[in-house]
Image: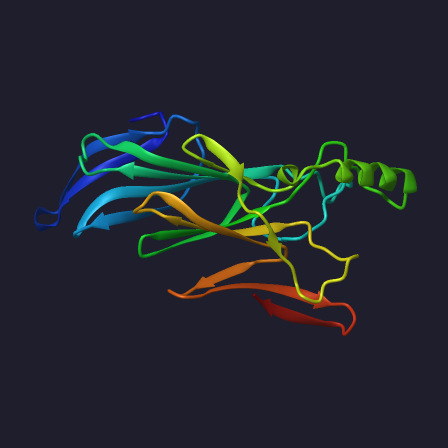
Amino acid sequence: PVATPGISIVETDPANADAEIVGFFQYTDGALPLKDFYLLSAQDQTTHVVSIRALTGSVTNAFQGAAPNSSSFFSIPRNGKVSVDLINVESASKPFQDMQITLDGTLIESRKIGDVLYLISRFDPWLEGLKAESNDTTVRESNEKILSNADYEDLVPQLTVNGSTKPLHNGCLLQNDIKSTQGITSLVNVTAIDLASQKVLSSQCINGNVEVISMSEKSLYATTTLYDFVNGQTRTIIH
């Protein structure tokens, strides 16, 4: 038995109903739970295993958009981490890592279409010193001062590719009819990674609720359920 987190490479022999472990890849950055994995092929031969590991933190992939505060019901968000490891298995007995991508946030879903991997993740911004207002104007003034001194990078998830870090996105989509006094605390990001060329193609941020993701080869649908307090009914929202 192997105590260190990793992936065993197994060679199968369907004709004789047999299988044998021929290689093992060991992670070196801790025991992040494995959530998904995919295969990358070239000329009908598997060249890479794509593993997706994720740590949730206190920000789950449900109840998107809930405003954190210091009450007993909500707590200060501790964002999770998502790691994509591209493991070369062309020599099955000697697998090695070709690329690692990590991003801040909680994994909601992943999909692979062709050679492109799509990650849907949730990130809840927070700054040190922010407190629940509870109708206290002094606390509100303090919060507004902290927010006014913050940089863009302080409020968005970070992307790291092979050790180089930058903001995951440069802007965020909002509902076209949203008012200046309205907002959702969660940032939902759709990140596209070209596994064959080993680069991040883009990452689109949506400031809104997302519960379920559906994808086709050309489209992505993000769906959520909201209660309309004005009309007293539940509505399904599709982005």
